[in-house]
Amino acid sequence: MATLTAFALEKMGFVRIEASEPVTATLHAIHVGELTGLTVPSNHQVSRDVFDELPFTCKVGVGNHINPICKEFTSNEFCEDEEEWAKNHKASAPYVITAIGPTDPITVTSGWVGRQNDKLLTYNCFSDGKRKLHECIAIAIPRIYSALVVQFSDLHANVDIKPLDTAIAGKTDEGEWFNDFTIEVSASASVSSPISDEHLENSIDDALKNYLGIDARVSRFLYCAETDQDPVKRFLYYFLALEIFTHQSFKRLRRNDADLLTSVIPDRLSTHGQLLTSNMQSELRALVPRFVWCACASWSHVSDSDVDRFRKLKKIRDDIVHGNKDTVDPSAPRSARELALHVIAHIETGVIAT
Image 1 (cartoon, rainbow, N blue to C red):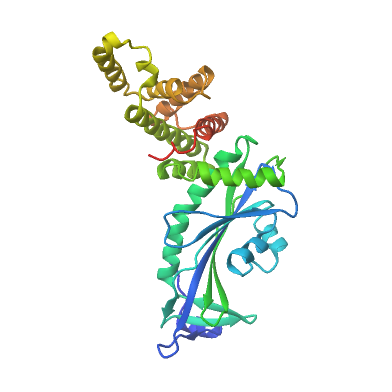
Image 2 (image 1 turned 30 degrees about the horizontal axis):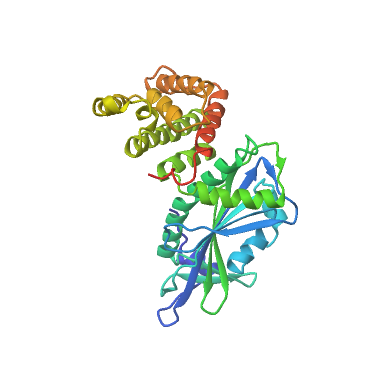
């Protein structure tokens, strides 16, 4: 990582933080993503607490303006000129804003502090606190984005969330704010469908209720697929998410019930009949048979055409893994995405996490 010399910092107006005059602050993380495929009513915004296994408070909001949601979450604006920010990032509303923090108060006795346009700046400060917030972002964002995409996919097949910008903001114990930015930019063209105020709120509530508990590995691969630009990687990420979800669902069926088979076993053959069903399940080690078993026993929304699609996608996956191809048709990632979201989106609440 490049660093500035003391000479350069002093020329920029920075001064060293002395141990006799420490700086104490709490830190907040704000992550902004662009929600494509939907249009939100112009003056409506939704904000919710996200109950997660994080050391800090986590909130998520959806709306057409970033600063009002950020002010609600932190009492501080995200940027001075939202239109200019959107232009620079080639972004358009609506946005998904995630806030994590505040951290516990952190006191630094070294580093650099300065001012630019009367705004407080720091350099090489609060690295431990920022590291912890970035770790929380790495955990929370894939789960939140995956939950929302799975939920909204029923409304529009092309719903997507593109990460745009992450900011670390600090607030000193005197109440003064300072900011540190890390920027990621992504842009794409899309067609959007309108969503009503009530439908937006209900969808966000359902997403956080039903899908925030998706296994971390599944949500991680979904998030990677949604944010990667390489078609082969996107395809593999979507397929991996579906593959892991299938194995988890199959194992859960084995643990919880075998009603589909036991319902046809007469009492006179209960012992050997139960042994038969147990043996049948234990023999289902391959991925496609497990997918079919889950479709028969639990996934009532999955049809023969879905199984046919899954077989074709697995053939593409096998060809890539075995070195028979290193490219995919542009329709392959789209098909894998549609099937993964279709399977996951209709699973009943409470049976997602293992």
